[in-house]
Structure formats: structure tokens, C-alpha cells
Length: 476
View 1 (cartoon, rainbow, N blue to C red):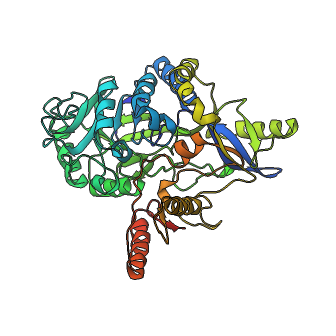
View 2: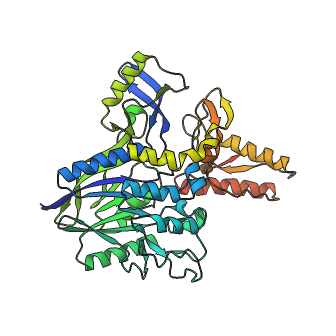
View 3: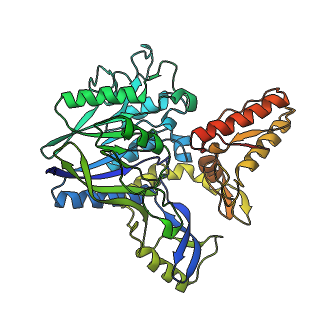
């Protein structure tokens, strides 16, 4: 039996998508008295900061090293990114005390420049071992290749494609992998080259092991199924901290959320963790470092962040009676994967004074008031299809005709819409910042019916190959 060489505390986030404020999260509670559909205000960086601060203090009290990892896609998702282009992300992640982050695909939605500026502001390494920047143009004002915090393939300023974190007396290597098909789903500069994932992983692991380090963490933005596949194909990875697919591990079925994968799923000798999305969740584990180079989660789970007095409404936006609120809050406190955490005051002040005040005009500009909520899913399920995305396609069609373009049909990528819309007033901030946050280019073409059919079928097939999440087409 392998001996325990040491222990550390791991906190991990992924796909936060600039959701610095709390979210009114729809939940279906399986209560003893019956099902209750509610909206609970959850997540946000002040709560995340409060949770991390407390977890870090507890780790220090137990003399355990503390490691906070971000598995990418910090960019995009709200007006905070649309308006500040990553500057707010850098400031707030620094405030959290992130130890390392991997590059997500949305970090490159608008080219390398926003990420290069982000790199110059962060106080932690940015990992992407299979990103080859050797061909980066020499005359670029925002070069990434020569920055010491850029842990990429053969960067002269950081020769090793990994970092080392000491867990007391035990070295642990951390390296990052990004999607090798990045140019297909994002917009990196033409001088960026992305190397094959499996081949790069094997080379980096061999280099780490040659340096005498046995415990290896992969910070991945490849997606859950790809992480599982990598754990089957590549030996030597102790732990994968993942992102990209917004996978929520753990049993959240009592509140109507996921119960698809156990927390810390093990494939061969590799543990895999991922923590949902949109700053709603954080993963926290106490991990033992074993003498055979593997790791063991001694305790750990994902936690949904809310507060004792967080706003609570019915699914349709009406206030709940005091007795209903007390019953529901009592039920929520009993859930093992929901944590009541007070927002960190310093983080709240930073967001409010430096960023939120500059977005107030968008937040107060009411566009419409919805008598009932509109549901959005990227592909149809047992409850039907998206009610939001077809409206976007119709809006594209309407606007094109208003501009004098004779368009017969509009096709919208369902992954371009990001949220459902609750009942009640909808602001410009909600529409431009959260529903349609991407600066996507709209194009129009003259096509034949057969070509249109092929485009629709191709999008469905390609979407299925990506887990059906991104390219499902909706028309208006």
C-alpha cells in the first residue's frame, strides 16, 4: 500500500465567464412536502472570495498548503468583459489569489491582444503547454512569447512548459493543455500554432518525470470527455483539473441540478475534477500525495455558493410568503453541497466602485418586460427546445430586412445564446452582456436550397461530435 508523503488543499474554478455578480439560479427543490420551483441568488465573485478566504485560513490552521487553480474561460459572458476587455478579470483574479490558470478558447475570441494585455496584469502563471508561440511576429506591440508568466511551448522567458508548486517537502508539477482546434472555434492570431494534445502531454510528462517529479496536475481546458479520454491514453497524470464543458460533478439532484458524474471521478490512476460554470460553484478537496505518484481525495466536493439571506423568489418572480421562505431556507441549509457564505466585503467594494458603476446605464435601460420566463437550452431535450434562440434568429432576419438586405432565412448557432430569461423586466445589460455576449460577425450569402440543407445537417452532425452543445442550428 502506498504511503502518504504529504497533503494539500485544492480549490478550483472554471468557466467563470466574467460572472462577477450573483445569478438568480432556477432550482427545483425535491422537498419532503413536495416539489418547489424557485430562483435563488447564487455565486458571484464576492461569495467566491469569501469562500476562498475561509478555505485558505482553514488550510493554514491545519498546516496544509493551499492551491487555487482556474481551468480557463474567464473571458466573455457579461458586460464586464464587453466593456473592460479582460482588465477587470485580471484585477479580480489577482484579488482571489489564483495560483495558475490555463488558457480557455474564449480568451481568444477576439485575437491574442486582449489576452496579451491580461497577461501583463496578472500575478500568476498562464499555462498552455501545447501553444507554440515561436512564430509570433517580432514587431507585435503585445508579444506573449517572451513574457515570463506565459508557460507555453518552448518560451525562452519560461523554458519549462510547466510550473512546480511545493506541497511542504513534495514537489508537484502543474502544466496546461488547450484545445488543439482553437482556430476552428476561436480567433487566435495567425502566428499562433496549437500542437497535438496527446503528443504534447506525453512529452511534458516525460520531461517532468526526468526532473524527478512524480506528482503531476494537468490544468485542462479540453472538456470532460476529452479529459477522461486523455486519462485512458496517457500515463503519469495524477490529477486533471478541467473546464470547457461546464460539467458539474456531484449529486445536486435534490435542487434540480446535475447528478451525472461523481466528484473526483477516477480513470485508471488519474483523478478528474470540474466545477460547473459562471462563478456559481467552487470545488474544494483535501488531497493526499501518495508514494507511487498518485493522489487520493480524502474529502472533497463541489459547493454551490449562496448566503443565509440571499434573495429568494418563486420561479415566476413573485415573492414568497415568510413561512415558505423559512421552510425553503431550512431545506437548503441541509443540503451537503450548498454552502452559506458571506460575500467578501473587499471584493464587493472593488467590483462596485471600479466596475459596476460604469455599467449602470446598461442595467437601468429596460428593453422589455416578460410576462413569463423564456427557457434556453442548446439542444432540445425532454422539455422542448430553446425559446430564446429562435427569437434571436428572427431578430437577425428582421434587422437584415430593415437594413435593405433581402434575406429569406436566418440561422443562429444555439451556443451563441448563453442564458434563459426570467420573467419581469429585461435590461440592455442582460441582453448584451449575458444573453448575447459575443461580438459575433453576421454574414449573408446567396445559397441554393440544397446548400442550405447541407449546412443545417452539417451543423447538427458537428454539434453532436462536440457533445451537441455548440453548433446546433436554429432558424428564423
